Image (tube, rainbow, N blue to C red; front, side):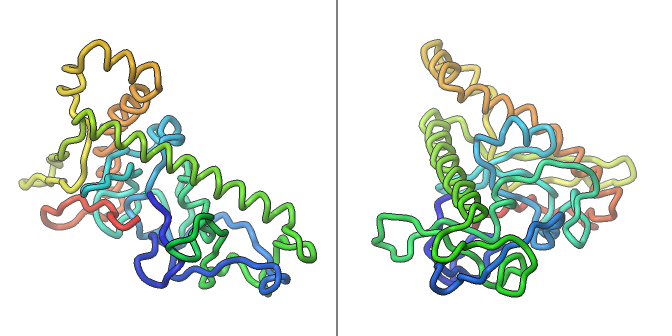
Length: 264
């Protein structure tokens, strides 16, 4: 979940570009609130921090991306481009938890230079949520940050700290050898061919049970066990998400692979 430098390539999902916020350049900028996220409407998997596991597991399956640096993901759909929780305008069909990664957009803390030690608050200049002509709250009061901007900065700082805790959690799972390739087979009643979903990782319950007492005691005391349990309890929701896809006619006509986002 490491933040990328503000360059037009290799940006996190949602972001088309990044520019640093400055009172000298953006003194007249305002920001508006919104009840919709059209940029999320066609995204099937969103990065999560461990701070969100307990809440998110009530709404979404929580899995882990593949690759050398796995990321926890909230599955909002089982196929690329499918989100069963929002309509095409990005409005939730019903009240649902929106991950902090989504609520952070269009802002991002990033290094202005690869060698820089500090992170700077940046924004996506292609977003219609921020700009001089936007009707909303001012970002600056003269040459000073407004209360609104201070709140945005704190939210982004809190997210970065949660992301660091999440990286440490993933390292612990890897060190313990608990992550394995996941696979889910779903057989709808009206289909002769089952749907096989892969392309994600999950905690191996058998390996978890084989951990010795000292390790189990440690991960229980440091809170890791509770996070693992939240992840495992959320997995049955994969079938519920599939059911929503069927109701919304968003199930592919042939077997497809689960493709969580790997570039977030």
